[in-house]
Length: 617
Image (cartoon, rainbow, N blue to C red; front, side, top):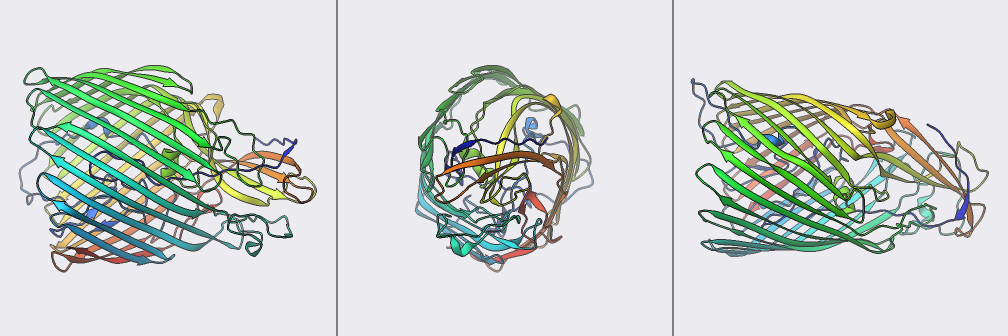
């Protein structure tokens, strides 16, 4: 899959986009999306809160194990299979934005680790009553360190800072609850991967200062970037109502870049209304309206780089869901309805999909579940950059899933032990896949062998794809002492034109073990394994005949596929409480010292640690 395209064009700018967080509704801020690094803090009752709790075992307050068998616990079985198989970039520590107040007015968490990892989390409630809560959250997480390239003998500097200021207010009355958040963030970071030609010859904007001697080695400049964001959200919902229940929300989020002058604005509105029709029946209508509009440079230009880019289109997606649900608390629960999506700006513009979810507890020890869902998905830069700060790509069509079918069974033969086996298949039109995007400059003769990379990014492409999944999960709990979980999932893809599912996981294994040897101490062991499809790599080199950089440039383009190693991550985390208001924590991350590329040209941080203290006041 090699090809070369030469043409003359004006040397123009290339872009980069980044954002930290979307918005949540209610009094909590968005948790980190990273699946491979999490943080732990001490709660009031010596129960550390483990962030990204769907992946890390919590230590629940449960009774001591008994000899008799236990019944199966059902909890939203439609979410059993992880349909969003993603591989995220690693950091030395990830910012946590959930509330950790417990029964105190405020908290303060301080941590420091290798790669100059600084963790600061602070929250305080100025008003703290049963009816009203008014407060502020301040978060800062930064790191800066050198990582060795797997494609040369040199190192490049990876640096990133995530910050968040969140003002919140909650009010609860007898029949209604209201919450609102106002947020601001400031996130400087650098593009990394290959090594700079000559860092001393570059200013903060990554622009050449005087003459630079270029060679043919695999090196890159280090470009700095900064993302600013601000937004607000508001939610109102009913409380203690007998027949009617309602919920409505509205939010706005703006994310912008230092360069180029680009911003994405997201207006989001929605609501839900449901009516109890009897002891077991309920009818629900759900509306979700989202509109994206862009300002500034809509061609995503970035200094030095010629890029044929389409102008960004303002776009919207309106989703309407209507369904009924039946719940027999002893045996059966069922939901059935339709999802209708209407899109503007980007195709497809209309879709209809089923919304069905079924649970049947056949006995106290055995049950089955299944679901058939679907719908349209709209992609935003805000969403993509929460998964990977290095993402940059042109706007793509909306994806549409006509059906996403899942089925599984769950059994609990012994007290504290539960088995879960599941499988699924879905078909998605315009499914988004990711590829590495290398950009470079070169002074001299045009050649396919040029490897003077200046930027190492991620972009996206779409393809129609079938996905097949099968897996299982085992959970075991022994009172407060042990909580363990092992999950295994295999994924298969079939794409149009026999293309590959670039970077997508083939096999995923996750093991979590939580041990509480004494009341005040909690230890967590986490292991993640992923085998991956090959990664697609697209390369574009602008060959400049002379200064100034805006003179016409020749362009060479080619693409290839790179094999990717298996991801093996082992983390050990612990937390200890000395008193109700003071504790310590320590995280030993990447104990296997995995240093291969997470994405092509982007190596992983080696073994590292973060340690700190927690205060409640």
